[in-house]
Length: 245
Image: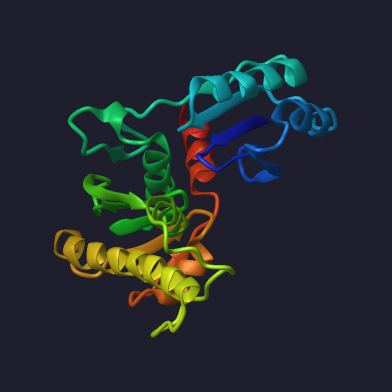
């Protein structure tokens, strides 16, 4: 049994992996009392043989999770750092460690599942896009604010834009709240569609498109391209890593 940890920008996700499937899983937002919540939950979990984690957060939060794992299970996490190549995937970055480990592991999961050639989009705090070819080569990608972060940036940089309710996505908005929501969500959708069109010629013309991240289900209906929603891509990539490490 292996405990897998995905320390994302918005929340911590984790799962026990028995070599074939996830047997137990959980998640907490960073606003929670992580040490207390993990101690309470993990007290009832079986002890894993190993703990493997991927992190895009600061060292302080990594340390807090590592201490919790050590207290609960007597195991310190082995942190996966982005390599030049592993598990069948080759990193496009000249400085491999600068590619987010979450993006790399999502590609590992896609490659292992036989989805390449593909475009991988992840919609959360950031919107990330990556192209993975049929040989497992990462061709590169884009990074932009996620739709909710776009909205927050507009609110933080303006005085007059102060909607009094949450907006809805509309083709033609007739109020500020809907206008802000519509513009940011449609901008994200357009970026994904544009990336797919730009990457397609290098991916054989008709790549599969996968969508992950906390806002994937909200963005999917706005896209022109057909997509498959793949939840827990980082945990799935960690599971592949754990099998081969």
